[in-house]
Length: 280
Ligand code: HPA
Image (cartoon, rainbow, N blue to C red; front, side):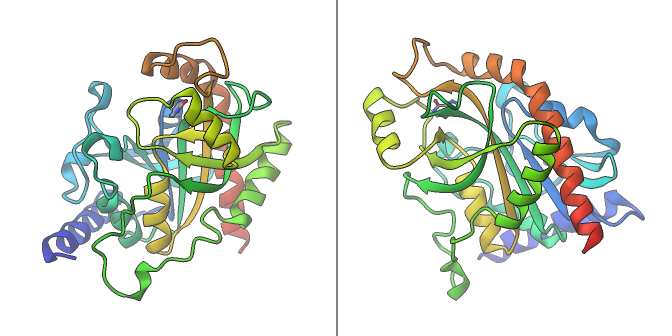
């Protein structure tokens, strides 16, 4: 890696430590995708750090909201909450979030919780439901690790999404009476939605949901030694499976309607993960 990149990562991590003050930095970070933004309002004693203050973070400006990171607590669980992610479809760069994930790792984060909005490939997994990602298909066939050196770049992805974290999440979801469907998330580059033929292809390939994010960050996180848990808020059935015209507006409006329940679930999951850490 160029020295400037490593320097930017170390400076970003040092700045997070400084802003956290006397408190130790949380070891869990949550990336908020479409529909999950309500989690930010649940962060207590929040210290807000604009992405612009963190030299390793990319500029983000989707929907007029600049990216920001919150350091605080949700219930008893210390967390860092990241509002805003850079997508590979914006620039073609699958490593757009590399500086973010490396900074989190350098700051001592051990668990990355990712959230997104996704299309469902199964009518039995309808809009409004949350899917726990058990595995992924990198159909884009791009890697955020291109250009890395050393044997660590050959990352084992047998457990890209930690089975232990999924089990904890399921306990929390069942306690809320909402056991989660687990499934395979297919990453498509976007920003266009899929064709009906592509949706049929994805069904045959064994995917349960499709979206335009998350997979590069998971690969980066595993490379950096973090455990990953990821949740998809289903905002639509895949193109051709329902009589709905897909658009970003459609995604956001369903995400807004269903986001409240999804955030409640996520709070319970973060609490369960924290209890696990506390008991360890
Ligand atoms: N396809 C890809 N990404 C998405 C979709 C979809 O149908 N819905 C929300 N994000």
